Length: 151
Image (cartoon, rainbow, N blue to C red; front, side):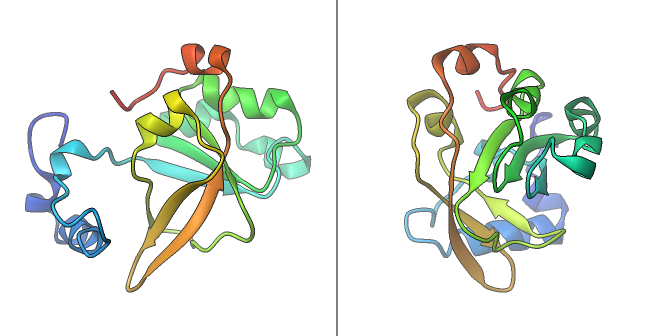
């Protein structure tokens, strides 16, 4: 919807509520929904290890996934797969504070990708807002090979 010029917050009460909650975060009071991408994400403790291999990056991308959250990646290959499909391989520092079907707001994703940051703040947007920390700095080669959705 956003890509076609329609404000998703004007069409969906659920999305409007998410943006209203984001606007309660200091520094994001005037956030414009037209400047924020919406995509799905997947979490696994250690992608590429055991049954987590079933989360093939190509399947994730077809389902609209923009990011992977993990405690760690089993191998460089399993970390590279999401990158090659245009998804960001985040590392969750500590225990994840989000649950299935919750929204995660990651401000300044483009800056994270291109300037690097080993400690970026993210927010779980729900009935309450929970701040948590992610990392996963990309190499120069990874930055140039990702099909990044954030322009």
